Image (cartoon, rainbow, N blue to C red; front, side, top):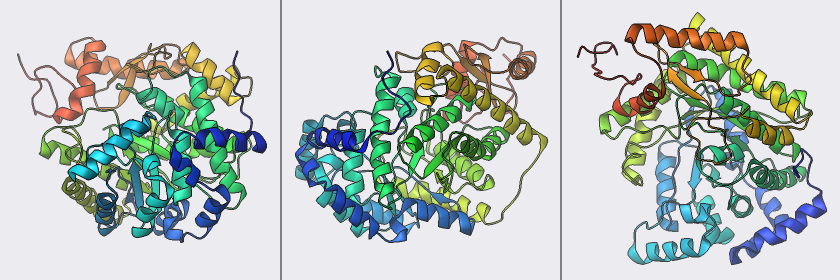
Length: 497
């Protein structure tokens, strides 16, 4: 029996739940909600995530929103200040893997070992172990608005500590956990966790403090269109909005096809607004939109190709006139990024953003408009089916939709996904479905995919199948858009045997 519902948690029940969350580690006792609300109220606008995004949007700029985190406080301050020197106003706060898995005793040992060794022994910042008072030192010592990253198991406690520390944004993306981080969790468990963080942010909002949540959606582990990703982002936004969240930020994953990427950028905020308004959340703002490198695509190992991939993402973000852009570092494929690689990577991306974005160069053609139309039709069909399955309750609908394969992704790490869909790229590099599973995509849109796939089959003389899908997945890491055997650099065509 499904227990979660799209209903705001009663305040007394929520305050009782908080006691259990804060008891998970001693630093939880540093969180005083009334004091934290007052602390947040006194933050300058430059540290309020939604205010920064609004200002960037009004100024017609695109800024970087990277990822970074290191365990030693002094090193974290130095790293963040290096981002400040690059003019980055949106500051990431990536927690370490032990924290994300709520293995806080191991995180503590890693922190102590890092301090003893004088170098990072963790792959992020152990925010719970550092606690509120220590983390405030970082927030106060640096410029910018902070947003921590976590995962399902630690999400509630990380959020409590982060907001009390002065951080003003945090993802609440339960489909992100299903898509890339949590093998066994059910959709219901993930929604239950997301409702807690949404209610915490909603509590702050009821006291006049606006905290933003960015929505990641179901991150695909293979090459497919972003319609399921966008639909699940909107579901996440709706779940958060019901709990009182007043600021949500879409994240558009840029996959390599300029027309498809720009089409997705244009349609995503419009669909957010449509469904937020439709379901009674017209007071929820969308202060800005992020263009992002797809988190789960293989990253180039060669330095030149890595720079190329970073620059592509920044270029499309600039042309799409998004407000923020996430790029990885040039050593992403090798290990934990160094401070120097952060600086070099973001300098390259920032150069593009500053030079291209300021030209306000408008791109519009039939290909972009077509991709926009296709994405809108697919996302609308999926969301309407989810609402139908839930009989108007988006939380219940989301659970039933995954069970039915109405929401699905290839090669999913989560055992509850149907994993009955598959995709490849067409001749221009746009992602198309070759297996639709139970996705409720209209028949005319399915035929559009089939026709695009058939064009590539005719040119290459081979069936578009599982093996091509795998080749296409790895292509970007090899400096190509299409995965092809005997590939050469002759305009992306297949070489002769």
